[in-house]
Structures are given as C-alpha cells and as structure tokens.
Image (cartoon, rainbow over all chains, first blue to last red; front, side):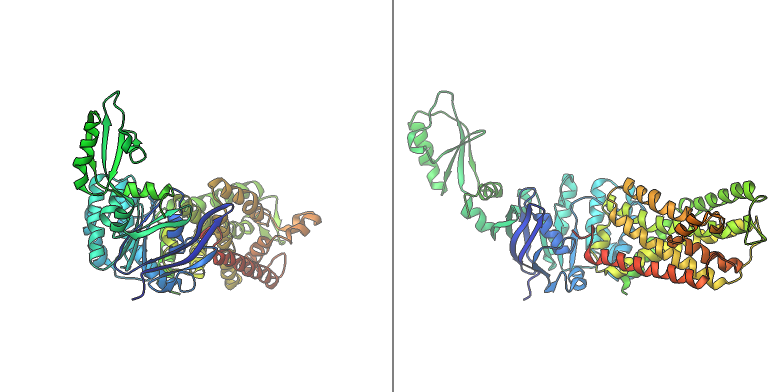
Length: 301
Length: 252
C-alpha cells in the first residue's frame, strides 16, 4: 500500500539556521501519528513543506504517492491541514468561509458535507455568524472544518489544542478519533504529551531539525521510561549508599527507578532499614513526558 | 483553469462588493470633488485641444485615475490584509496554480477599477456633456490600465510586509505616476523638458489613449499609446507571474 506520507531526506535552511537537517519519515495509511519536539525543532517547517507552504532546499515529500511539488494538485487534494495560528477572513460568515474553501478545491454543491462537518463540530447554530464574532475556540473549530471540506484522506493538525479550553479539546479529540476510525490518516503535533500518549499509535520526536526517536508509542514508553518510586526523605535522613547512582534528585525529592512491581517491597524495606522516614511516597508509571525529556537530553538514540 | 480560480475570483469580487460604500462610492465621491473644484477654478482659464472645455477634458482623466487607483487598491489591500491576518494560508493550501492566483486577483482588480470608473463617468455626466468618439479605445485602455495596476497591486501586496510599506508604495510610486501623467492637464501645456519626462511614464499613454476614445484627439497617436500600455501590461504580468511562480514571500 502507498504510504499516506513519505518524506525523504528533506532539508531546509533559513540563513544560518538549519530548520530541517535531512528528515526521513513514513506514515502509513490509517495511522494516528504524533510529531513531537520542543519549539523550534522543525515540526511546523516539516508540515509546511508537506503542505507546499515552504519549499525545502532538498529532498522529496509525497502525500498518498503524489509529490508535493511536481504533482501538487493531487498532493493537496489528498491533504487537509489545520494551521497552528488562529486565522480567519473577517469579511465572511462560517458557511461562506466553508463554501469558499470547497470552491478552492474545485468542489461545488458541498452543502450536505458542510452541514455534516458543522454538526460534528457543534457549529450548526453559528453557520451564519460572521467569523469576527466567534470565540477563539469556535474559530479553531472552523479551521478544522476548513481542513475537511474536500474530504482529504490525510489530515494534519498542527497544535490544534494550544490555548483551547478542556471541553473543546474533548469534542475535538472525539471527532478526530472518529475520523481516524473511518480510515483517515491523522498526523498531530502537540505540546500536550499526555494527548499524544493517549491518541497516537506511533510517534516521531524531532530535535533541531532531525528525527531523534521514531517508534510505536508503546515501545517508546517501555524502552525509555521506567516505573519509579518517588519520595521525599524526612529532614536529616540520608539516602542509603546502595541507591547512590541509581536514584536521581528531582524538585519534589528522589526518583528511584525500578523494572518490575515485585521490586517495590524490597526497595521500601531497604530504605526503612537504613533508618529513612519516607514522606509522600508515590509509584510513578512511565509517561511520554519522561521519554521526551530523556530523548531530548540526548541520553537515548 | 480549475474551479479554484472561479471561486477565488468570486471571493475577491465579493470582498470589495460587501464594503462597496468604501470601495466604490467613496472613490466616486472623491473624483466628483476633484471635478467640482478644478472645473470651478480652471473652467474659464484653460482650454485644451482648441475648443474643448476644461471640465469635459478633465472627466476622462478622472475616470482613468479612478480605474488606476482602485485596481491597484483592490489587489494590494486584499493581499496585504490576507498576509497580515494570516488567512492567505487558506488560498495557498488548495490546488490553485500560480497562474490562477494571478488571474483571480488581477481580474477582480480590473472589475473594481472599471466599476468605479463607470460610476465616476455616470456622476460626472451630470456636469458636462460627454462624447464617445471611439468607444472601443475607451474599453481597451480601461481594461489594460486595470490590468497594469492590478498586477502592480499584486506585486506591492506580496512585497510589503506591513501596511506602511504598502502606503509608501502607493504614495511614492502610484500617486506620482498617475498625477503626473496628464489627468489634470494636457502635456502640451508643460515646458518641453517636462513634456519629455512625461513620455517615460507609461500611465501617460493610458490616459492619453483613453482620452482619445472620448474626443478623437490626443497628445500622441492612439496606436502608439496602445503599444506602450500593452507592453507595460505584458512586462508587469511576466514579472508578477515570475514572483508567484517562485513563491516569493508567499511560499518560504
């Protein structure tokens, strides 16, 4: 099967800044794919290159087998992009905005589908409202609707929940999940790692324009993150020597990683036998944030 | 041409039509004020082309000036607004070619120019009887002028990053080019040095040829004016299309 997205050796430089340094990436059809990385890692440049908004210095990008430069019409017909910044045309209403967007893709008489999108995004009663009068969250939903007017098989959402309230976030994710279940390929960039963890089946991490981790969410969690005991020691207590080198200090106290739950009892006993008084004992599950920090520190490859 | 062009063209028309009071009525009023003031001051003192009354001479100049300025305004302000607000992205994401993009913006600019020009003509007809010696020349020069300024508007709108840069383009290039092109006077009334300078201004030929359409007399032959105006259009179209093809300031 043709991959939904194929990115090969894509590099882009802005002056002295290497925004993308030879990125290779493939996303299969039907995947829910996460693109993570700190600010300035190149996520938006990569997405913009895919959408034809940025022309890379070298390398090729394809959407559903169509090159985004030489076969841009088909590439763009297959791609729906929700841009990161909230932008809108203040001259028009929600429905006009969506009709124009359909028209740009050469689609007329798109009202049934527009109605369906509006209903799914809870925008039906705002259809005739001018874009100016909508709240930020509503505008964001209209942008999602704009990305879907041409029923693209591949949908890219660039930080769609930045600055969006909890309720909308939930509505949005339900909708995007359903699109994914219906067979759409979803690519998501987000700063909320718990979102990526719960939604994405596979994740790429970008750092300084390069892919530094690429695996299924499950594998990333199991290979990079550990279960850990988190605790504080009462004042005056000293960490037993056996744990030195293994435990690390965090803001809240100590973090003591372990492989399996069966170890917990022994670890706590060791601490107690050494005369330590444990405060705020927690058992931490591995999370993507840990993996992320781990990868970004360059400790893992 | 795909459906994208038709929609973008229609959107550009609707954009100015929705605020027609500001984009059509206001420039018509401005032109009428020019007519009232200049004809009041100069009607008795200036005669052009022998027996032509100054007010009659002025009308085609004002119509052409309105076409030029409004065509430029339409494409340039639409683009700068879209760029500054960021919604230009919604036109860049769909499968619209750079030629369709150019055609939509420039044609909409021409339509706005011609509508405002027609409005000015309609209103000024109350003040002075008009003649239409060669209507085809009138149409030809109106369209070419709209196309030239629509293209310049695309260039300016793409080049400018901020509104004040666009204002500078308008104030230091478009205004001098139009005002010093014979809107208000026949260049034969100028000292010979400035007559010579005027011949390097392509807008002069547009106004002169346009006026020929009304009165059948002009400072230079209409075919010569047509040639200069048309070549200007071709050069600007080629330049603008080259900008768009390279994605200058639109596709980084």
